[in-house]
Amino acid sequence: MATAGSAPPGGGDTARLTDAQRALRAQILATEHWSLLASRSTTQSEVLTRIAIFLTLVSAGVFSLGVLGNATRFGGAFAPVAIGVLLFLAVLGAMTQARVFNTAEEDLAHVLAMNRLRGAYVDLDPGVERYFLMSAADDVDGAGRTYYPFATRDRSQVLASSMMLILVVESVLVGTLCGSVVWALGGGVGWAVAVGVVAAVLNLVLWVVRGYRSYADVRRAHVPLRRSGPGGAGPSRPTGS
Image (cartoon, rainbow, N blue to C red; front, side, top):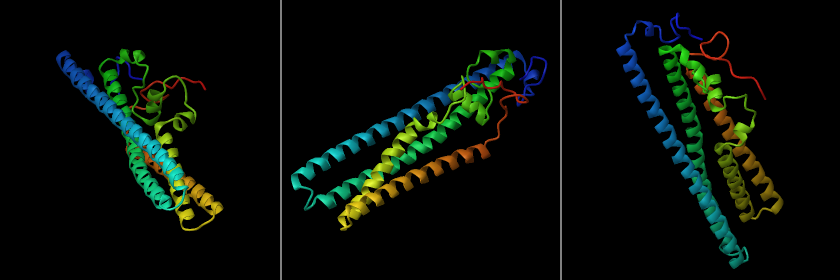
């Protein structure tokens, strides 16, 4: 952690600034901070709206297929119509899913950027760091502390996320679509169910791998100015479960 008598990490020129220059730098940093907050809020609002629209369309599509199935006794034109509706929903789901995953990466970038700005505030006034609940370290551990500052999150952070919600819904849609195609082509119910389950699991695994690799790419590409824990500039994460 930087002290008043030492040059802060990433901000060795701070000690040479005049009061007017410090005030100007604080204004610039605050403006950038508000810009990041606005971008993050807008992005989150947009993706949540898209998720809501997609889930509404899925509900409407499944309800429509139920009505059509009762009307046609699941014969005649039901199979091609069902496949068409499921294909449409699966395509929309893939687009929504890609946007949700991209938003997760953008959100991580926003958190890292705001952590870096907190580090700049600490460079200007080292004594202010103890008032920050969120991290002033712009490494991956610092981002984790900002997401949840009181302890280390378990896997529920990922499992309960919007990303996993949309992934599960899309995987079920893909599995249902593939199973419906097998059934429409004359395959038995057993084959249709088996193909559907395999397709759903495969879709789930591929997207999880894609998400993991994207986060790994961020970790490799990002060069933090301030690191968490002993030996770094930021405070250690509180211990806990």
